Image (tube, rainbow, N blue to C red; front, side, top):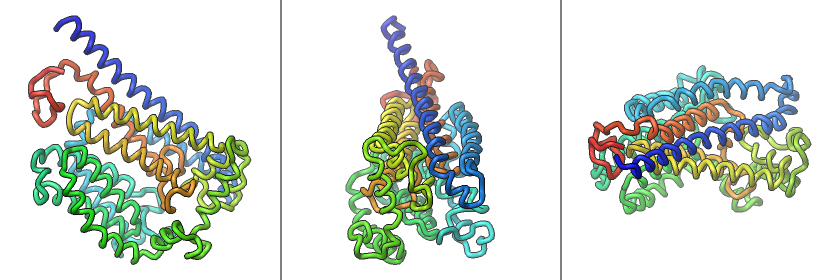
Length: 400
């Protein structure tokens, strides 16, 4: 190997290592900010419910402890392992989602706020973990099918049938937004894997009447959409959360009213520590706070796609794309709802909102990204023995 090639290899290892470390620091920053924000948003609600002011904070801390373990394990485990367990992961996700909707499982999957999305009293939310199953399984099958993806019957349709099963189960909970999100996530990974755009257009046109029929069947979804387009067309209660969130963000102005000084946490804004924690950020930290969180997730997006571009196998590239897309779009959808740019939906703000299912998933997926970002350094100089696992443009047996 020439001196120039050796220097290029060292530079490549250094660059990848820095991106992985930057992602770790970014995650730690979001977690620290999230804990501070969560305590301010939840302290009064906790006391009104008969708990101590740190009730939600301590529960979130327990989630961070478990999540940190998952993060370390995922960062050390070769990301190709997720390809090997993609089928069991998908079967497990379908089984857990089934438990949420079967009529004889209400003892372990009770109705909470009108939907059955949680198991065992709210400690497990299968729809969150199913996101990772959709990412890993779709990425695995995309690589496995190869050129067959460009054929509708043998490429796209079989994948859509399995992911569509998850989407139907989510719609039965009911949670139409997460059902649509599964299909969107699948589409992003398939698009990155080379599926024809014409197939997406065809299936999109076919699915419009199906989705609209579900929207009409689920009254709360229809009311939220009508309330977003015309506030006077629905009852005031439909837009109550959104209106209070807008009041909170408007009260914050440029710099916010100050940490712990927000008024919406006194019961005016429902779920200020969860689905609408973005409103609390806007009130106490102002435009600067909202913009800061937006920039932090923009940095997460940049680092995630940089890691994806440098991944050593096609599967890891698609896995990194799916994880990055999931984390960033979830955050931006949450913030878009909080400031009134999008209709109300129940998406949490990763690393910041209260909710241990999403927190564990976020830390686990970030750990996988860190592994993908650092795996080039560990396998540098090792041959690729499986042609399907070699990076694009590399023949089997070539050295990295």
